[in-house]
Image (cartoon, rainbow, N blue to C red; front, top):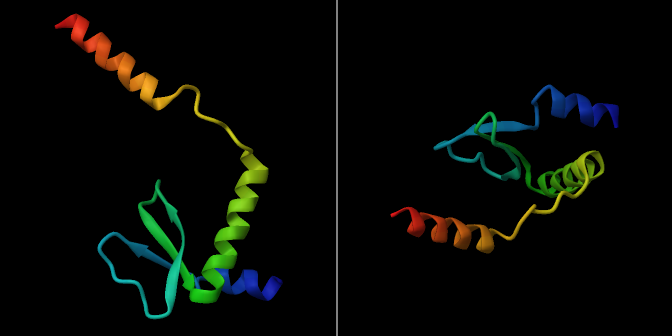
Length: 86
């Protein structure tokens, strides 16, 4: 496990792809970092495994937070409020 962490941390296997760049051959998307605006890519069999493990880790770390309100209701309320002001 330490060897896998070493290779992934040292970016021997992991590639950070900026917007507009092409994916290297045989690489697939593992996750997207919105705050850095890059996609993290790994070789095809590993990207799926790492994406699932990362999703589980984030689920354990943060848990599930549902939407506070229904987006359709919020849109309808904003639409009605906008009509009242005009």
